[in-house]
Amino acid sequence: AFTYFTGFKPNSGEYKLMGLAPYGEPKYVDRILDEIVALAEDGSFRLNLRYFDYLAGLKMTSSAMDALFDGPARVAESPLTQREMDIAASCQKVAEEVLLRMANTAHRETGMKNLCLAGGVALNCVGNGRILREGPFDNVWIQPAAGDAGGAVGVAMALWHRHFEQPRQVDPAQDSMSGSYLGPAFGAEEVESFLQAQGAPATSLTADELSARVAEVLADAKVVGWFQGRMEFGPRALGGRSILGDPRSTAMQSQMNLKIKYRESFRPFAPSVLREHVADWFEMDCDSPYMLLVAPVKQERQIKMTGDEQALFGIDKLNVPRSDIPAVTHVDYSARVQTVRREVNEPYYDLLTAFHGLTGCPLLVNTSFNVRGEPIVCTPEDAYRCFMRTEMDYLVLGNFLLDKRDQPAWQEEVSWQEEFELD
Image (tube, rainbow, N blue to C red; front, side, top):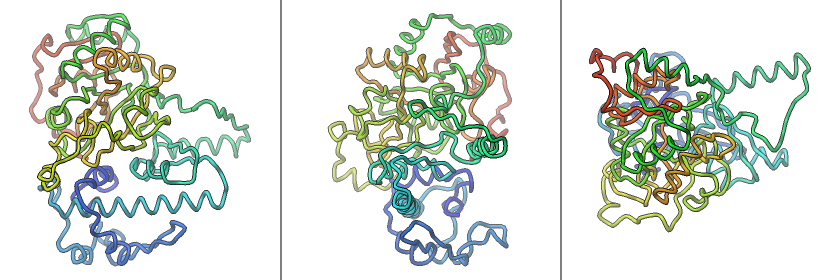
């Protein structure tokens, strides 16, 4: 409902509220808890349905919500105001409180040391990070496809164990999700056949040559489409179908948002970091393979805002560098971290290692290989089409490297951006 009220698409754009929240102040928390959400100590809650219209009407919220927040819902795609930012901050604060209370209740009732999270709310990586840092559990594991897709896996497993009475196979030392690389893969012959049919010039490189060359172009502030191995299962790009950039660049966030992803400028990007270096850059020292934990950037890497910068209007703070990795540091000095291990994704690990050796920075900007409103690319054809439609500079397809400057002119109707409904 709050997603709708702030002008985003319900059951789709909830993550945008999380990204928008740091630009606002949680000034409406008491109003939400007093009027809309009756929150119990154990984390359970009841909603005051007079503020909602989805049961009997055609909208998510009622006129009572308009009155409570001093005006109607924001019209989609209209300019954001401070009100929407403050509502987002307040909604996020309440959600975090619910999650922390539920986690504490689960620990109190079970005494367990480990917590597993699933469901769409488990994609709220800010809340997940608070559970890890402030909650009572030693370890927190989040299903990488948290939501309906991951729920389908749970149904299949429940049937396998309960109906067919098959034994559970649990290895505490191994993550059975295989890094979430569970989708299709395309071999070198398939990629080469596509490139030849497309008439797309490409250079074939060894694994070492590819890592070194891609690290060089990334260090030169170029943007690279990275298509390697099996596709990820879930909403996060994890180094299988990714768009990559240099996190040290002050212009990279706006460049990738506006010229490549075609999405709202306020939305932050996430870093991929070598697992052995994560504690050098962020206030965390644990695995986060699925990009579902948020952590503060290390204090010594932060750039404190001046008084004038702090006084800026919400979105205007976007262009103020906040650390020595500004492209992945959100306005509140946080980052949504993915840790990378060699044994999970060797090509991506080798690229990060090469970039680290070249620049001293063991991180890359990592965002999903798609534009706003489209699904993440799956096939070489999908990847090439997205590459040519956007202002990406290079494309990696397996062991092939493509330079945009060498490609034939891309002929297509201008209306391609209308093919998919915006998220």
